[in-house]
Amino acid sequence: MQDATPTDRPGHGTFDVAVARSRQLEIQLENNPAHYRVLTGDRPTGRLHIGHLFGSLQNRVRLQNLGVRTFILIADYQVLTDREVFDSIADSVHNLVIDYLAVGLEPQRGQTSIFPHSHVPELNQLLLPFLTLVSQAELARNPTVKEEIQASGMRNINAGMYTYPVHQAADILFCKANVVPVGKDQLPHLEMSRTIARRFNERFAGNQPVFPEPQPLLSHAPLILGLDGSQKMSKSRGNAILISDDEDTTARLIKKAKTDSQRHISYQPDSRPEVSNLLTLCSMCGGESPEAIAERIGDGGSGLLKKTLTDQLNAYLAPIRARRRAFAKDPAYIREVLRTGIEEAREIGAATLNEVRAVMNMQI
Ligand code: TRP
Image (tube, rainbow, N blue to C red):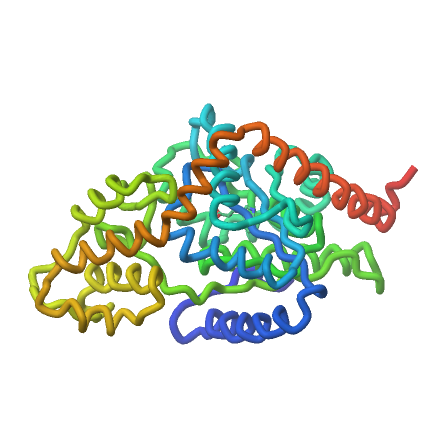
């Protein structure tokens, strides 16, 4: 059996290969959008922040606008793998949909389906045959799962934590998605989905493959750090600006952001990560390069940098936030979006499950 776990140790090259393939795929998507089916997934653990916006949401909107059929899956079952609190899942799902609509995803155009996977039984049923296609050892060495176990601080790890990458394969394959936009941490999961697709086809489907091997599409947006300079912007660390925050909160959060003791502003991501991150954010809002913004601010120092970012970010987010407020007033529409998404997903899932049963000789 092939090793299902890629490594991205420096010098190993697996990550570089994935980046190169992604660039190719990007060109093919633009040339032939009808050939592709994109699936992305989010855990409903809280509201989305500007790291999500610049890192992945804008890319989804771009793919949608290219005319690619897009599935946006809300992975509510996955939330249960690493936390014991689940009373807020429904509220998170609801707010996730509001964030999606606010940034410009448009399910009403008929090319984008938004749905929680817990409501698609046909998808979940694929988990059972898929679990028989991977070994326990393969599950145990998934590097992303290992990191999450560490980070969760939980003493008892449930079996869902080890098996969710197989469930994620069901998320991706139930609709035969062939492109999955992801960050680097998701590459081991995608490799597992590819392995499962391949093994399923080999074992059951002879020369008529049922599943495509989904390809990762890596984001080339610059990484957005937390406002405290830490590697990840995240709500639970209190270092994030939410899409749903108001202008004053945004100003307050930026005011508190960590900088350094040098007055002159320069863009040096390696030696001045915090200042450079604020410049990157400014640049994402206006299209001007971070170097040019740094030059303009110069001896104005971090005070002027923060004021510039506050003004630019609030202006950039204003129309998104206005749409957000409007959608938040219409819960019936949000439910309608989910109901339609679930219906579309179930129809496709039922067709796939039929094929799966046929090749497995389980039809009656
Ligand atoms: N594991 C992903 C995350 O933690 C969420 C996810 C669930 C996902 N199912 C997916 C991502 C399918 C891509 C494809 O962010």
